Length: 300
Length: 334
Image (spheres, rainbow over the protein chains, first blue to last red):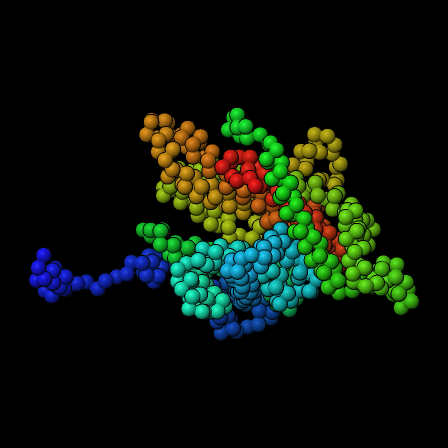
């Protein structure tokens, strides 16, 4: 083969304009192709925007009595979702309570992910006795029934947003720790990690710059599902009367509505629907992200 | 040893069980230490609780009480005492109920077990059924409907499902009782009593099962889809076996393994679920006991429930491991 034919073969065909290449493996391309992820994002966005702008859209204090009590939903245009037993607007209440539920859900999940990443990475990276001890600790925390454990933590520290976040995080970090440990074990002996070690890079820096960035996808997926389960746990705690006494969340609205369940069940039904909607959006987002981040799944 | 495909428990399996039991001991000890730590962390000690109960107490009386309970001793002495009592199955005394904590728990545990096992049974049966249907008609409308329902099941708080079922079946339709375990107006006996309890069980059992039906549906679906791809299934199809026997005997049977694991590992979550469900339906079980303990500020009792339920989880994990090892001869028993 002569040089001419070779260069002709590899020369760009000038006459033909190539279409702009779409990287079908890119995150945004795959994300936009995943219906599940998009529906989840849209639902979550709706709830989050509602919570963020709660104060602007519904300026009234959710604790103010604004009308006569026990107005059923869809019967009064001024109060589309009705009023509760004290004449407080339910729609305003739902949107404001959503702030508390979301804030607790996201903070608890964030704390759990932080704990889980630290424990899991140390355990997987160093191995040996550190791994032995940390794996045992993880097991202990996984053995105690999560809600019973959370109830004990919140009851002993007295109910407040802080103790609820701590109670939920302390019961959910082991799943993240196990995940991160497994990923770290997989990456620990990768060639680029060995190269970094040979170059004399410190352990902390290797973990932070070489291992964690490559272990992040499953953590993101698990994290979004963790937010969902944290919202459910917060609701259960508030329903059991262990919510922050100074704040209203969806769970405590259900707990309050329960008192009049027989005559005005809508007070219980509506906050429950809000929880379901939010949790469903988060789960869909998590499942969608799982498909998006897993290159073996084809999105069609 | 495998005669009918299932290995009988032999010396190997027993040794494996022994090793696992030994491994469990540090876990139990750690939970004990945590429990003791919580007990110390709780606001107010036993003397204050009793003094509060009595209305008022002089400092001298409090000092006597503290001496009586050994609360004036060093933390190590107290911890040793706590350990010795636990080793004798003494979980402490509930001053609110004037009964030992263990007696209270043991009297309530069967009710919780009844609730949990019934829910688990329903969840497994319905979940495997739905999952199998879903996998068989993958991508068709039954799969779509079942997947949508399980998405809802995953996202709905258990206690809310319970409350809505009460509204529908107790308040509106008046078919089923809204709470309790038996009719207190007529004290039925014999068969009538069993029927009465069964009527009271329907709503709590289905509320608790709701979430787990969703879990088993999804698990069965994905396990079956995985097995369907395997060579032996293709061989079975290729040699012309009927699709239904292939689904039942080749696919479903091999997909059951993750379901067994899941069942064992779900006990903790199921216990958590029964706390809220028992609270909603006034079901006299351990969960309700924990709820009452929170409100009576009976920390001893609350920690007793935590310890006892953790212990149950440990036992169920052991049993799961064993069943798993028996079902799958490939599992390495060390």
